Amino acid sequence: MLTTLQTAYSDTRAADLAWTLGREPLPALAVLDLELGGAKVQLRLLGASHQVLLEEERRTCSETVACLPGSSAPLPLGVAESLGDWDYEFAARVETLSEGSFAGRAQELLALVADHPHGLAGTFPGSPHAFTAMLAQRTEGQVRWRTWHAYPQEGQLVVTRTRVRARVPAAVP
Image 1: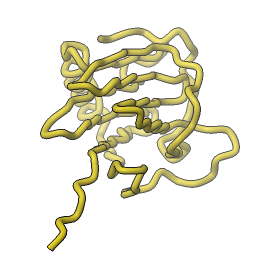
Image 2: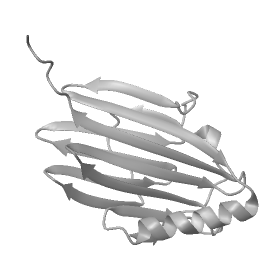
Image 3: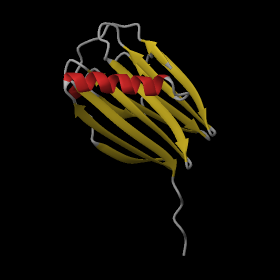
Image 4: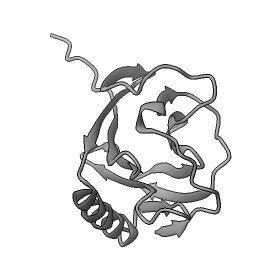
């Protein structure tokens, strides 16, 4: 699903993004509710990036990547945490592209996500390549999502990937 977000594009920077787990739902500009093999996933586009809410068998996970007031911690390159009996893994990277490459990559990603049944993308008014896009899937008992946050004024694309899976109990000899 592709939507135009009804908010002004602010001149935020990739370096302003922060990551947190466990936040309550924040006000969203667009939401996509999904049922992925027994897991309820809500993709949420915020005015300042994204939030994913996951619920399965009374377990919950909330991931937020956004420009959060008062947060000065940089976006981590990788995180691995235990959430109850889930294993959570997060990775992020920043791609810096030339103006022409950025425009082509933006069009490619928006087309991919807009046509996907588990995809949500929002473009910001005022800049044709300013967007946040998200894509979720369930494979091999894992729920995964990828996100893309575009900052055309910097030629930067922040790419994240997350995997949540039930922890496999250790074998007892």
